[in-house]
Structure formats: C-alpha cells, structure tokens
Length: 145
Image 1 (cartoon, rainbow, N blue to C red):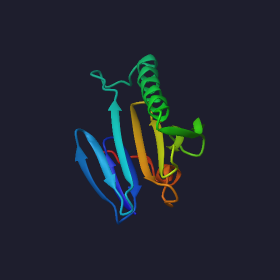
Image 2: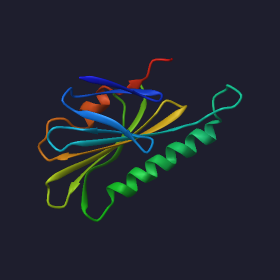
Image 3: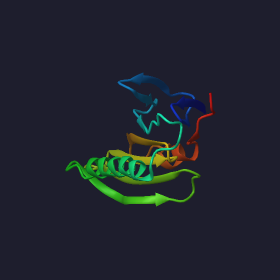
Image 4: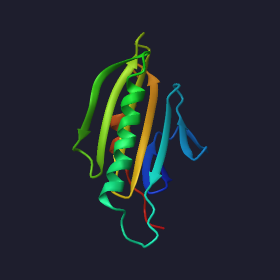
C-alpha cells in the first residue's frame, strides 16, 4: 500500500494506483477504473485553540448533508443508508449506493477529528475487491509536521 498524507489526514491506497492534487482535492485512480476523491475542510483558529463545538458540528453536518444528497441521485440506488462506524478511532459515517444498472459502486464517507472534516467518494466497478471499508481501515491522522 502507498500512504498519502493529505492535510491533517493520512490514508493508504493500493500501490498500483496513481494520485494527484486537483482543485484542492486528492484524486486517486486505480487500475480497474476505480476513482477516489478526497476533500478536507479544516477549522482554523487564529488563537491556537480548538474551534467552538458549534462550528465543528456545522461543518460535519454540511458534509453529511452533501453525502446524503449525492447518494440520493436518481441514477443511484442506496444499498446501505448512512451509518456511523465504530471501528475507527476517528468519527466516521458511511453511505453505500450503486448505479441503477448495478455496474458501479458509489461509496462515500465523512470523517472528523474535531479540527477537520474529510469527505471521500469512491466509485468503482461492482465486484471490485477494494471498497470504502478497506480504505477507512487505513485512514488516520497524518503525522504532525
């Protein structure tokens, strides 16, 4: 696996995947037409303290709403509605969908560490072994610089 440090988060993708930055996002592409797009919204503080909980909550709520809107697209069928995962040290929510013809998986996750919110979208052909659960297993905080 290849580790990518992106803002406050680090994650792993298969060694055969390529990755590049595009419009402030990290885009990873697999050899089987998989595509992972990762965006991060950070809560900056000018005083060096953590952001107020209300601001953190607003950013998480906005990311969850974006995830729900994307999964409810008319060309998609929701396979598993949004749920919170408890298998990660980060706060993580996942939704799983597929195209109406069944050919493409559409999986999204929102993760937060209280200072930043990550939104990841993984699109891959149905039957591809690498999915959002495998990606989340390698999701963690990036080392401090």
